[in-house]
Length: 190
Image 1: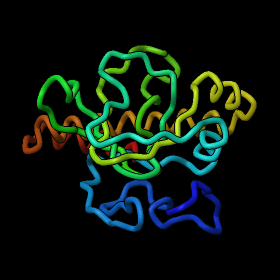
Image 2: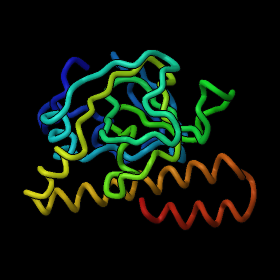
Image 3: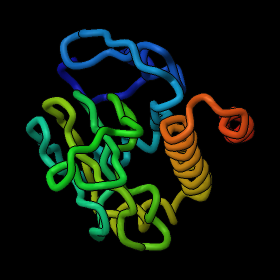
């Protein structure tokens, strides 16, 4: 994929599905993803606004996007690659991602968009990654001008947070009846 444009004429297939078992990375490489750990894909209008306000950035494999407990003042969308989310910083402790963000998914910035609290998870590049990120204050100012898009963004942030919870529960207790009940309950958000 050579462009960041998200319009109806050139919209890639993976942009249409909310959560799927396959995702396209980079130059058409398809990988299989467990949908319980994949974040929902960003709505077109929100993506286009982030792209308009933001800038592209490249991360190397294993590079931190944000450390746990850091303040996040940008909303980041994955363009190519995979961002992993972990409860501990992978550079200080050998840890695995409990959730992921694949192309056209929010990598960070949605959990604390309104509260501005510190990041409760570490976000790191599991592969070489290209993201587009924009300042949250700039995005808030633009969203306030369009109430429909504001509520679409808020609803999407809730879905992303719910997806993280589903992934974390599935990772912590994958085979218990209690986990199945919690996953079922949270999955209703999708």
